[in-house]
Image 1 (cartoon, one colour):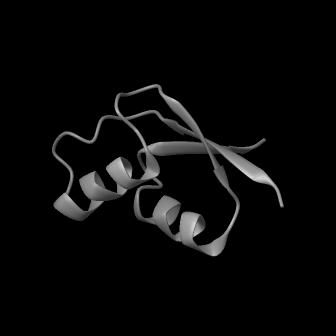
Image 2: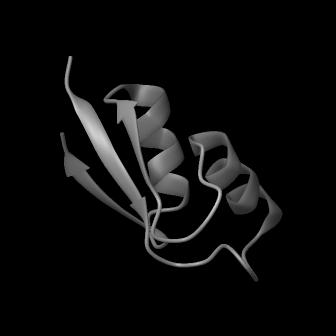
Length: 59
């Protein structure tokens, strides 16, 4: 199974509470941080919630 590189490109300040919690659940602590997550339906759903804040590439 492939992995996804997810980079937080915009700050979560001023976003809705569910979006802030999703950013935390993905493992982000600060802007410009990159996390590697498995490519599955749960992660894709989380990315869809915050798609305007992150940048996704295949690892």
